[in-house]
Image (tube, rainbow, N blue to C red):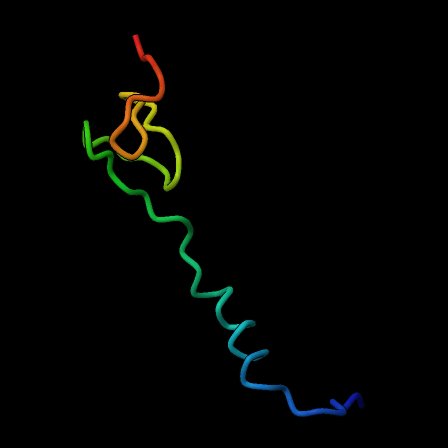
Length: 58
């Protein structure tokens, strides 16, 4: 029967368990139009990023 040579460290255990707690990326809301937006992305509804107009949306 296989037996581990070393004790599993707290960090390794916590890293393994952290994968089960991950719930995906939390959507944020645009400050200009309040549409849901992925973090660090341009708003597809109004074309703003960090309060500045980046894209022209028709």
